Length: 115
Length: 132
Image (cartoon, rainbow over all chains, first blue to last red; front, side, top):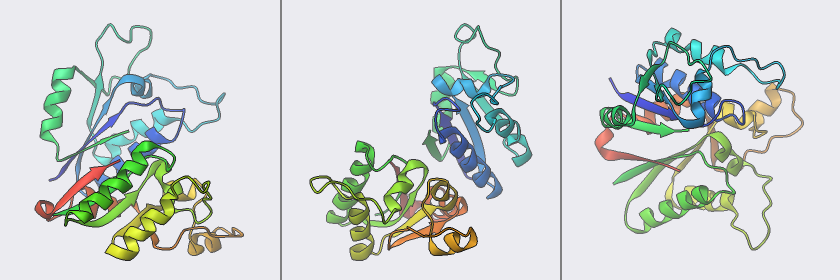
């Protein structure tokens, strides 16, 4: 099985990038590709719990991320130290990893796409 | 060697132009660019209505030249394109739009095309993927 790693570094609502990154994940998963997602930097905001998007009139990315396991995508990582996001709760679906673990992941996947 | 490209950067960014320059350079050096997949804001390059100033690069023409001279396939993601106002005649008719604007030599394709033939091809030894 081929393996695709998607690294998301942008915040979820300033443009379409995160939504389109997840669309790639869905498409790859339906073609029997093993997909993992890593959220880092501004992208960590995608993993905050309980997005309130009515005010900005944007589609809720949190719902899209929660549907990843329906497509068989279970490997969801957050590149974050415990101290770095103390003000916000990150989704418990994401496993916290450090830079060293990200480096290791990058060697294990056939294709890496950065958004 | 055969190369495929994923282009995600918008036409007005240095990364997009670098993608074109790398393609042209690879071909000059005897390599083949089999296909290019336009995603995210890169799909604007597939608009027949782009009208840059005369002293700026017309990226649409540069990609079309690659397709015409070297049989490179230019695929444009249907979802990314339609949400940015790039539609072919079929999509325009289906959605009752007054016009279509997909430039010649570009083809509408789904993300499945990207997965199957560009990102993770069966014969991976003969195909290298570059992303801009």
